[in-house]
Every structure is written in C-alpha cells, then in structure tokens.
Length: 346
Image 1 (cartoon, helix red, strand yellow):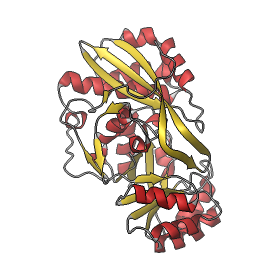
Image 2 (cartoon, rainbow, N blue to C red; image 1 turned 135 degrees about the vertical axis):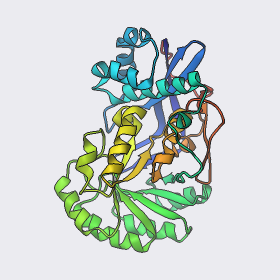
Image 3 (cartoon, helix red, strand yellow; image 1 turned 180 degrees about the vertical axis):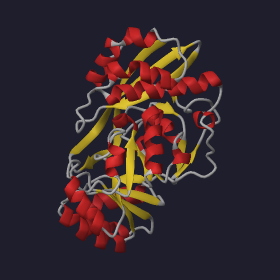
C-alpha cells in the first residue's frame, strides 16, 4: 500500500466567521491510499480551535509512513486499530487516514460504502446551509444568494436574536442556530424563548465546552433542544452529553474518522440522543465520506464544499438540501486537484 499526501489552500466563497474564528481560505490535507490499482481519499482540515495544523498532521503521517505502507490491507477498522497507538494524539491525522481506508475498501469491494454497511439512502435527512456571522445586511444577502429549506445561523454577537428576527423576514425556511460556546446559561435560556417563536429547530453548543453545570441548568429550562458540538469530541464524551444535551454533533476530524464515528452513533442511539454529523469547511472528499452515514442520522450539516469558491474533488452533490449519490464504489469521491496547491508534499 502507498501513501500520498496532497495539501491545498481552499478559497472560500465568502469570509466565514463564527464566534471564535474568521477565515477567507481553508487549509486542507488529502491523504491518498493506493493498493492494487485502487485509490482511496481522506481529508483533514486545519483548525485553530483544536490546534490542528497541516504541518503537524503531515509530519505525523510521514513519521509513521513505514507502518502505514507496510500494512497488508484488510479492513479500515483493522488499520485504525493498528495505527491508533501511534496516531492517538492527533485525531485529524487519524481521520484523514481512516477516511481514505474506507474509500479504498469500498473501491476494492466494488460497492458504495453505505451499501457495504447494509444501509439504504432512500430516506436521509436534508443538510442545512450555513450563514456565517457578518453584518445583518450581508447575512441576508448570503441567505438570498442560496435559497435553501434549512439554514444554520452562526451566532455569538450582542444582537443575536435581532439577527435571527431580521433573517426570518426573508425566508420561511427552518433555522438552526449555533453559538459556538459564546453564550451564558442565562442568555441561552432567555434566547431560546425568542428563538422558538422565530422558528428555530434547536440550539447548538451555546456554552463553553467544559461548562457542564451550566449545561445542566440550560437542559432543565430551555424550551428548545440542545445539541453538543465542542462538548462532544471523542467517544468518551457521548455518555456525558446525556442529561446535558438532547443531541450530539459528531465531526469526523474531531473523533478520528468513520470508524469511531459509527461507534459514537450507536452509543448515542442507545442513550436516546438525537444524532447529527457535522463538517468543517472541507472539500467533496470529506463531504462524500460524511454522506455515507446519513441513513443513521437525524440531522446533518454537510455544506462545507458549498462554501468553497472552488472544490478540489467530485463526489456526492447537494441540491436544495438534498444529497445525491454517484453510483460508484467507496465514498464516491474523486480528487480533481483543480484548486491552488500548497507546497508539494511527498
């Protein structure tokens, strides 16, 4: 098996701002695993909140290149277990490799990944489209630019309810709001009342990730469901979220790929939590991998590639929230490499 790494700068359609970050370009790393003429692709973006850099992810994968390339390919889960002792401190590196292994496995078997898992895509949730923080005028323009049945509104400003109220004037679409840790417990409880009247479906991660006492209070008093994001990073977080949140948002780069994500989904379902998978601002490589999990989910946020000015891959397509699957094996992703490439990586 051969490992090839491709690093890219992905220009965004608009400046993307959330409560603790703002960017015009997203750095990403594509891991390619090839074996017997088949190529599998996985992705991990940089992320300042989690301290993930392309240089660190690349360096770790290069450090363990011999172990990766020396593996006689069997299943993605076997590779994950084999490399976890060496990559366990960097979930982003594990994700890129695990995603590539799953894509490769599907291609070797000649079937889309979800079918190998025994799943049907006949009934899957719609994906939201994200409106990042900006002036309310620009947020309205972004909303009008992309007519959609379901929006996620990024919040974390002094005028959050007013922003949602103004956006509501321009669409009847369902709203979800994501405060990215920016609110207090009191603000959340108060805001939830107004937001429910404005047609908001749920609130994602209102408090700081470690504020479990605050979330317990909000859980008791909020009139809207609460979904964990920054509070649900790895498998051990799932059980703790029960009784503090009504649902969890699993992100592949945070937990380490499709292998642990499927375990988190199973545990969350057993605990009665609503299940969501979210994305970073990533290419169709990562988005196509997420799409394989849709039959298991209640909600999904997989609009990352739609936020790009130029994609670097093809795969699943999304129209007005609905996901369309190509009839090809693996995750459905193919690297096209049309975006500006960063410094070449071996």
